[in-house]
Amino acid sequence: MTAQPPPPAVGEGSTADDGLDVVDGLVQLSFHIQAVLAQVAADHDLSITQIRLLGILRDRDAEMLQLAGHLGLDKSSVTGLVTRAERRDLVRRVPSPRDRRAVLVTLTSQGRRLTSDGERRIRDRITTLTAGLTKTEQGTLAALATRILRVR
Image 1 (cartoon, rainbow, N blue to C red):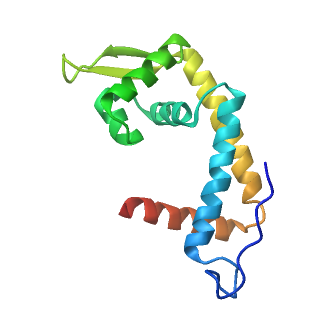
Image 2 (image 1 turned 90 degrees about the vertical axis):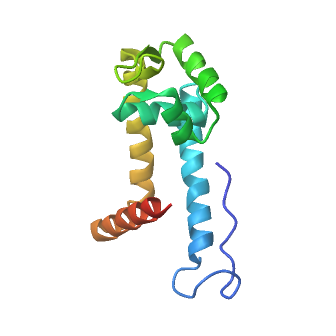
């Protein structure tokens, strides 16, 4: 990973207390998290979008339209994404019990193993990233992230 440029000087989008304002802080943090995801994806010969697909399916089966909504992609792009994951035996399509015209996408046992390993690696890297925070600060960060994501 390349070195990050120093934070801006106070008065240039930063605060005296922590060096970064909220926008700069979140952008820099998102770049770091994206790098973690990209590295874990590359270790498994996957794209970040494929990692996101597996992450969504980790907790639930989903219909193609639901996946499109979660991923912010059109249905044809999701179809290609699922087809590529199927070829690697990471997911399979099954009939939807809710709608005969729809299919559910679910993880295979191989997909579940890869997802579990990827989740562990991501968790380890982010735990290392936040190790300098107290447990209280980590809880506050998690609570704030949850609030921000619920507002969107």
